[in-house]
Amino acid sequence: MTDVIVFLGIQGSGKGTQAKLLAEETGFQHINIGDLFREQISKGSELGKKVQAIITRGDLVEDELVFDLVQSSLAPDCPGIIFDGFPRTPAQAEYLLAHYNVKRVYYLDLSEADAISRIEARRICSGCGENYNLISRRPSQEGICDICGADLIQRADDTGEAIRKRVNEFYMQTFQLKELFKQKAALVELSASQPIRDLKSIITKDIQLG
Ligand SMILES: [Zn+2]
Image (cartoon, rainbow, N blue to C red; front, side):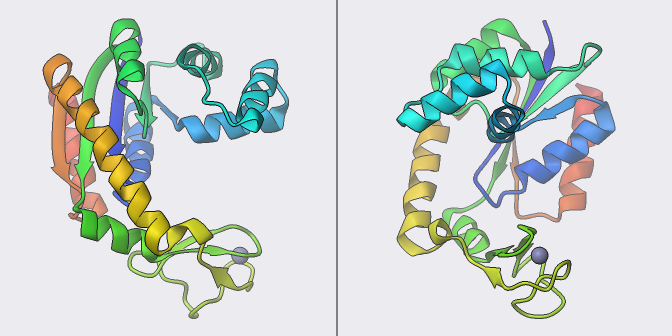
């Protein structure tokens, strides 16, 4: 069975960053399911077309299809997979536990208030799509993209009520996942409030020991 490491955490917890850093360190393949869908759709692959039809209908992509996509995207000599923000449901977690060797599940813990303020601080370039954050990654000139000079904007779903709703849903969903992984796999909870570099060194040491 393929080795798997999972990163769970709310938007703004830095799970994508840590997943990417650990992928560089271990040679594991970093997989974000949302990016994988977008990639396959833009490539126009058979699986991509299937996914697009399902999303266009407003339906959820079935777990089996999700895992087919994952398998088809793996390099032949891939030593393992790092999932970022996946699984999302207990059913997906059960599938993962049954078909893969789940070595570690890292949960990057961020308080609800911190999560909201980190998401509210996000800005995106209206020209080139580059991401900024007024707390952790400020542009050198306020409101202007460093790369292309276009205006920075806030996405409509990164404000007020929309964030609170998303944040609530995340904690409800993730509570179940954490319980499941606590029983059946190695769950490690880490504070997401510490600097990226500190968190990275804790995770690197932990995975080398494990
Ligand atoms: Zn730009």
